[in-house]
Length: 582
Image (cartoon, rainbow, N blue to C red):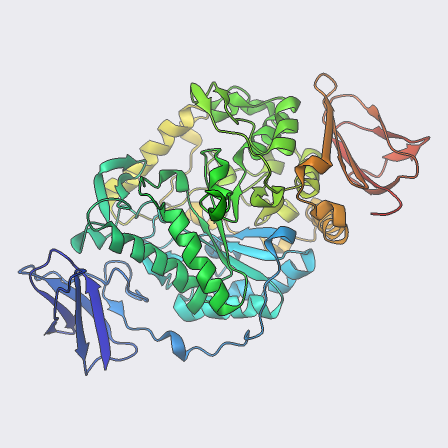
C-alpha cells in the first residue's frame, strides 16, 4: 500500500492513475490537498494524476523519481530502503572550506554519479573540502546545465537517479568531503513544467528573465513556500547533503513580512539541530546587499554565505583587458577596484554604477569574509562566454597562476570550477537539449543578443542543443598530469596546502587584511598576518619589499628570488612569503 497526496486547491476532482486504472482521491482539505491510499501501489509503482474532466495524466510535482523523463509518470520511491554508512558524519566547517564546483554530466566521460565517485580520492588529495554539484534534478532532454529543472524533487535518472546521488554523497562523506547542491527556486524550466496544472506556483504580477515569477507572496503562497522549503529539507535529511546554493535569489519576488530566505534559514537551522550536524545555505545574489548573509536575529535573511561577483569582475578585468568597457565589466578594470573588493567585499556599496545607470549596493560592516565565496572561474563565468573558453585559454598559464594565487590567498572562501586546477583544454560551453524546437531556437537567438553587449561574434557561439557542444565540454582526464596541466595542478596543491596549514589565511576579519597597489606599474600586495602576497601584472619586472625575517613560501616562477628584503618579480608572476610564525 502507498498513500498518494497532491496539492490541487482549485480542482473539483482528482484521481491517481496507475496503469489504466483511476483511483479517486479524497479532498480537498482546507489547505487544498487531496489524498488516496492504494493497496496495489508500492515501491517502484509508476503513477500520475488526472484532474476534473481532463484525461491527461500529469506527473507528481513532488515526484521523487522520473525514470521516463519529465513528461512521463512519476515512480514511487522509498528513501528508507537505502543503507547509509555515514552515521557519524560531521562535515568540515564552511569557514575553512575549499569548494569544487562540479557538473556531473561533464566531470567524467560517463557523466554519472558512480563515475564521479572514482575521482573523489583525487579531489581529497588536492585539498578540496566541499563538492558543489550543479543542479541534478530532472530537466528535459539528454543534457543540460540543470538550471531548467522542472521535477524539483526527482534526481536526474541519466546521472543515476536517487540511489546514485545517495551513493555519491555516502562516498564523499567516507572520504571527508562535504556535498553542496545547487537548487533553483526562482523559476521552473520552460519545458515540462506541469506545476501550474495543479496550483498557483507562479504569479503574473512579477516577471523574471524566465517569465512569470514564483509565487512567494500571493494567494496560495503558503503551500508554494512549503513546496520549496520541503524540497530543501529533503536534500539535507533524505540525501544527507550538507548544504544548498540558491540560484539567483535576487529574482525572488517576495514582499512578505518574513522573506522566503528567512523562513528557509529558520527551518534549516531546526533541521540542523535535529540531525546534529552543520547545514549551510549559500546564495547567489547580485543585490550587493549584506542583509542576505546577515543573521536573522540581526534583521537579515540568515544565509551562511553568498557568491562574490564583484571580486570576480574586479580580478578578471585586470587580467584580461579584452573585456574592459564591455557589459557589466564597464564598472571594473582597475587595481583600485580589486583592492576594494578584497578589503570591502562589494565594490558597488552605494556608489553609482555605469552599467546599471544608478546607485547600487550598500556597505558590508562587521561581517566576516567567510560569508562570501571568492572565485575567478565558475560555470557562469566560463560557460556564459561565447565559446566557453576558460581563463588560461584567454590570458595564458602565467596569469592564471597569479589569479588563483590571489583567490586562494584572499580572505574569502575559495571556489574552484572543475578542470580549472589542471587548466583543462576542454571548454565549458552552454548546452541544453530542449525537446521543443521553438524553445531551442529562442535560446540560441537570446544568447546571441546577450553576447552582443560584450562584442562577441554571434557566429562563434556553439549551438546549445547539439550533442557535440555537450561532448566537447567533458573533462579530458588523460591530460591531467601532462606538461602545463600537471604544472598547474601542482601549483593548486601547494596553494591549497598552504591555506589549510596557515591559521592567518583562515582569518575572516577583513580588518586584518592590508592591500597596496600601483595602478601604473600594475602590481599589488596583500598582507594577512604573517603572510605577504606580491603580484606583478605589469609588462616590466618590479622590485617589491619583503619583510625582515620573511622567506619565500611559494613562487609561480622559478626565477623569483629574494635578497636584502627585496623580491624581484618578473611580469605576470606572484610570490607568497611567510614570517617565522605563520
